Amino acid sequence: MNSPLKMTKPVMASYLLAALALWLVLKAGFLVALFSGLLVYSLVHLLVPTIQKKYNNQQSRMIAVILLSTVVILSVSGGIWAAIVFFRSDAGNLATLLQRLANIIESSHSQIPEWARVYFPEDVDALGKLLTNGLLDHASEAKNVGQEAGHMIVHLLLGMIIGSMVAMQDIASHQHYRPFAAALHQRISNLGQMFHKIVFAQVRISLINTVFTGIYLVVVLPLMGVHLPLTKSMIAITFFAGLIPVLGNILSNTVIVIVSLSHSPQIAAFSLAFMIVIHKLEYFLNARIIGAQVNAKSWELLTAILVMETLFGVPGVVAAPVFYAYIKKELSDQALV
Image 1 (tube, rainbow, N blue to C red):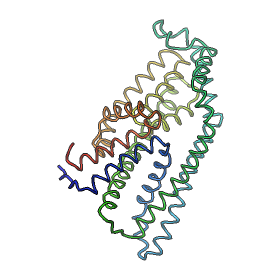
Image 2: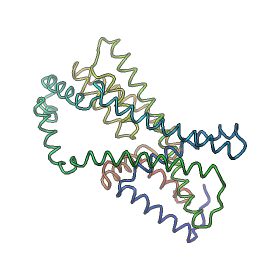
Image 3: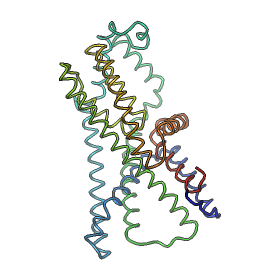
Image 4: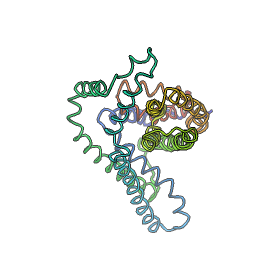
């Protein structure tokens, strides 16, 4: 058990300021900037030990870190751009995917059990009406989509630049902080540590899940004589949705089961059973990859996601795993959990 930190006034003030900052991040819409900055900061610190082995003097090391930061920012930006291009292409276009799903539901409606039909739109027009009503209900929000996208890109780039600058400052010199600054630095360090553990662990889990799903869609089903449409889109959705713990798997599985209906209810049921088995195996991976890192079980993360979604909407869903792990880290350091 960790020995509790001494609760001096600077430490208490740092906790209050950290709580206020996290609340403001969600309320003011700075989550993208925070996470992009933490991502670049984590990547730079992950790769710096290799640089330090080759460069002993301070100036050479700073040049290497600047180049590394530039490469990381360009790589992250390139990955985001590649994802945008994919989802705007014919293979990943969201509108095309929704239309194909609507056609699948319509063609499979007669094969769905009577008790389940009430939960599915009857045809393309019914699904279109459902989506239209949803858009009308959120018309005021939809008007701001373009503006919000622009703000998000600016926040993303600024966050990555700030993250690289902070990483360079940490590497360039060893700061001697006064009590309050030292306590606040510790809060930020704990948040960065939990972000690193959660995000990189979730990426590994999503990759494993995507590999299994790809094997099922590209190898297992074709061997059974079943060739589903939208295979590339489903694999891409599985990876990106899998970056969101628990809820992402539900989303990707729903898409796969609906597409499986295009062949038969039996294949849809088989797909659902396969996904359940895969995710049962993933619980063990979660326990080893995430649970061992932050001492958090699946039900804890799911509860945190539900609470944060209720309080802050979609940003709360994205922030929940990292913020929960950070809070639990602080409580653990105080020997309270």
